[in-house]
Length: 196
Image (cartoon, rainbow, N blue to C red):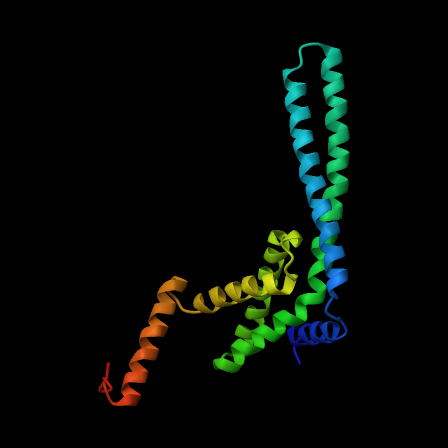
């Protein structure tokens, strides 16, 4: 067994021990994350304003006041950046099993090899991270409802990149629809099977 297989086995084992968050804990986590993100953005804007004020200050006293504001804003920004990063690391943990379940659906429907399955999981994890950054808990939706779309989009893009030429997703969907219609007409005897 290769090191890569051992790593994946450990990954699956650790995921099997995780449970999906409850609605209440999910709501509390995303509230805390959104507060941390908002405060980080506010501190970032305060730092930019203080640096801009420091550059435009005329006297030495005014410059030192603006410099002190910039230092305070930098410290606050670092604190909230750390808090935001902590939430971005911990929030996905409860949903990683969902990503594997979605990847299994793709594998069940199409004959894919083991490497593609791992790539699907990696793409799904990226979709999950994107969903975390874009999710707004105030809408009243559960996170998994929102994240499922992002996970599927990232997995679909990964499967489409599998070939040598990238085909846009809308073109690939149109091709699948045309192929399905052709197969339906062939089955009904309305169209002869072509050798092309």
